[in-house]
Image 1 (cartoon, rainbow, N blue to C red):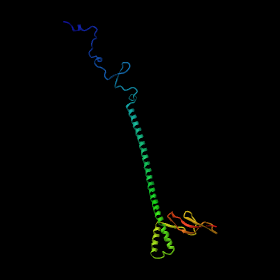
Image 2 (image 1 turned 90 degrees about the vertical axis):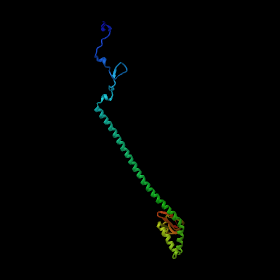
Image 3 (image 1 turned 90 degrees about the horizontal axis):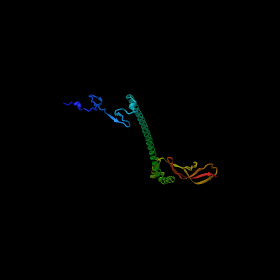
Image 4 (image 1 turned 180 degrees about the vertical axis):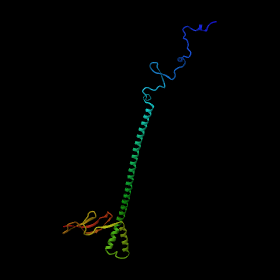
Length: 215
């Protein structure tokens, strides 16, 4: 009977049961370029932050970064609020100026319209003055009509300008003729040819006068 041990080749290596090197293969290994060196994949990269900082230091670094971002955002918000407040104040000032300008223009337009209406009625007022000078308004219905017309003009602050003896003023007087007068030292109104009228500070019509000048 043949012994099984006689069939084993002489150059074969004996197998050792329980050998750890042959029983378990290394896990999670990758090949690196260069020499055949096996490096575990879960090893930290050389020179990375994990290799230099502890978890406590990394936490402090993250907190500092978040604090810097919050400070920057807070400063940006403050700048935005300041800009919006400046824009609001500027808009309010422009609105106030606009309202004042509108009111001023409205008053100016109103005065201009009143002046044009009164200027158109001045010839009728001149006829009324001539009729009064001739004694036609001393009694009767024309006297009442004349008083009502003049009362209406007075409501708009219409003032007659141009009186005999006052100094000549080219702003309110229109010289029709110059009369050399002995002893005269200034230019004065010698006679009023046609009275002028002023509405408030606006001259509607200059008074036509004869001016006495030094001889």
